[in-house]
Image 1: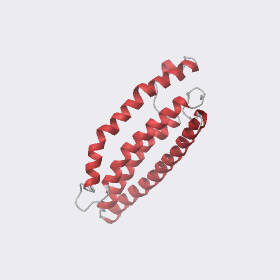
Image 2: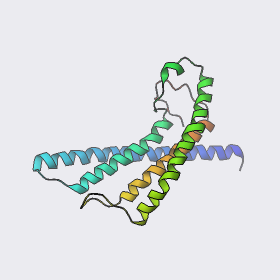
Image 3: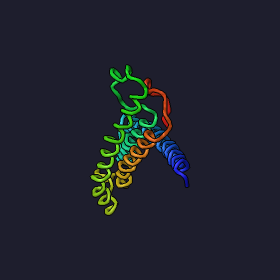
Length: 177
């Protein structure tokens, strides 16, 4: 395979992974909304609680938060200090973004995966469940979302560096991939 075909395949994979992460965010957001609504109605309408539903809402929130990071990065929706960068030429911004992604994003999220791995393997070995008595099992599956999202951040960051040039990042609404 030639280098351009490998690059095209990698960028296509990153676009597909972005769509999967976006679908997970949408599903988690919808589930979280419905779960919190049900919790409130049960608590204040019927005077009862359902600990499994509360755990499920917390799990949905965790999934939404960690997978929203790579989705926001891909869409240039992450936080920037625009006071300085809005006056700089696009070429400088592209180089500064590439350096920041390679120098900071890749090492930080690589370290997160490395540091989280022992806890994750332990959680899987005991099939960790909720800390609440009678709570929902499967916490180990939710804990898996953190290193998966970190790997997605690294993949999307590298795709932004090696991918085609994008317009200036003012406004945060354009799609990067």
